[in-house]
Length: 636
Image 1 (cartoon, rainbow, N blue to C red):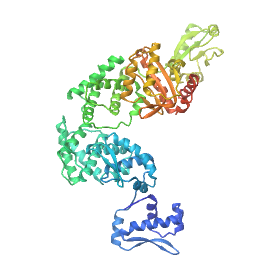
Image 2 (cartoon, helix red, strand yellow):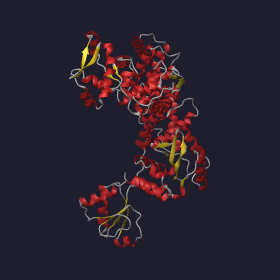
Image 3 (cartoon, one colour):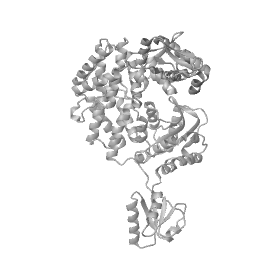
Image 4 (cartoon, rainbow, N blue to C red):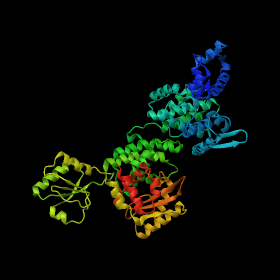
């Protein structure tokens, strides 16, 4: 027995072993006595089947009366559970998705609204996200008058959508009721765990824990669908290793027992594909001979060497890592198996240079192949490329503090002070050493701060006075200035300027904006004519929306002659795919300043962390924008 809401479950528990009056029940449940009476009536209708009722005895209260002990014993053998009610919009979207994916009949929103204690209008709003999810799997919802809505699509798509959803939920909480109670047959995932481990061990098939979890959920979904009369149509898998086929054959035999129905040959073939798509390959590249895999690895590394001047062709470890990953990736893209990448946003933010390189290389290769490589798959490739770049190049530009030393002592003393400072803070750059008189003659100081062995006046930059043999306190004072992040403020000064700043208060579409900005940069000599086409092509591959209304359009490759950022603020917004952009930063990056300019991305990530969108879009001049931007980056 399952209760329609949590309050009925609480009421049932309260009255199990004691007699309680209406007033006490109302107080404990924080409801009126009228609600208590209504709930008792609802409980009695549920308990009627089990030969029991709650009876009101005047002067004492409600107590449980059992008319048929044998029938009530069946209820005690399996304690009643409270029906899980989705409370948030995200939970409701997941519950709605599972209901449509597992229901053989049409569903009415009115019935679900009553069951979950929300309005029909609320569920209609949630259905926007539900339909968007189904569209990604070519599934459609059709409405029939007086019957409700029913899901239509191929059985492969239904299983893929349900499996992906349950796998994502399992990564966050394996005890989620949608997994344990709603979507899968009771006890099936637990029984499958031992079956899969035994089959994979016997046939030497290696999967990661996440991969094995996915296959287990897919098998549990298959058991439910097969048992309910929804088999897969004809299908044949190609290029699958024999040990994978043997493991799939053993697992299919167990699925047949669990489903209680015979499995079609297509079921076993699809199982082969899912296992092969998540199999961990041997690291030794000599064991992998698929032409597509080798061709793609070589193409990516050559493209990065040619277009970005980073030579990773001789990195044997990177070549082997990419080869082992792409082996299974090709299987996935060939059969359109989608794997979620929960770290995708983090990968974009932490490896912006590797992301652009890999995306450009894969997109270029995609013109010569029928395969479509998803954004999630590209994210996994970026991790390998990013690690390879860190192994060979000092990527991740940081502007180190530049220091002016003022000292009237001897040359030996100056060298001693320099040695002490560099030993304590090796990241500083001592640009020059001046005498007191030379310092006083200067009108301004270009360095970040000044260290002096004599007391001097400040010239718009901080001054730290030290003894010839600095004390620990004096070194700590220097450290406070050394550890200040100067990279992002310096980037704002170098690559952002008033000449490349616009506020757009009239309606404008994305293509018009690209054309106007690129034409302006072309006329100024920052880029050539082909820059516009490359920006449009890059946007067509994957949206450059970073989030929170911030978009970062740029070209494929390093096509600019000189690096500049064109800043556009659009308070009314500009349509950007399925979203709306209010702050657009067109990046024109040159090869000579590429590593340096990659730190620009940190500025935009900082805007996201600071939730600065509203403040930025309200700016009406470059000075206002720069003040807000400087305030954001100075806090990190």
